[in-house]
Amino acid sequence: MIDFQAAEKKRLKEPASEIGLEPLCAMINNNLRCYDLAMELSNSTIEALPQNYAEQ
Image 1 (cartoon, rainbow, N blue to C red):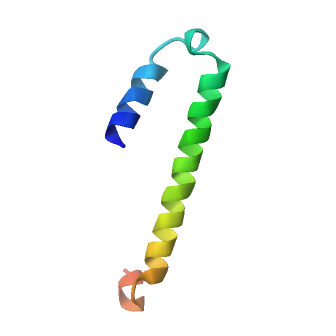
Image 2: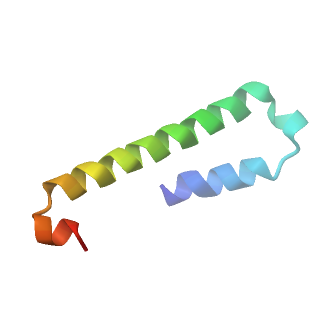
Image 3: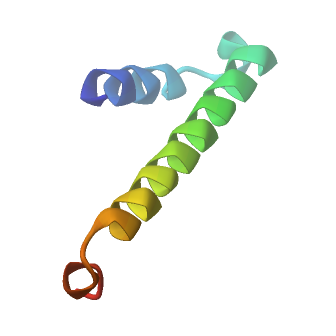
């Protein structure tokens, strides 16, 4: 994941005109999907924890 983020940061330093609209949209979609998956994992982890741990 760290390598992926580093590659994205490097790519975003390039001018937008050199990257193109389609790769930028794909990058945004990938980031949104990653966020959704992380939230889903977080929620399912909290649900799986015993009540006293989930409240902390």
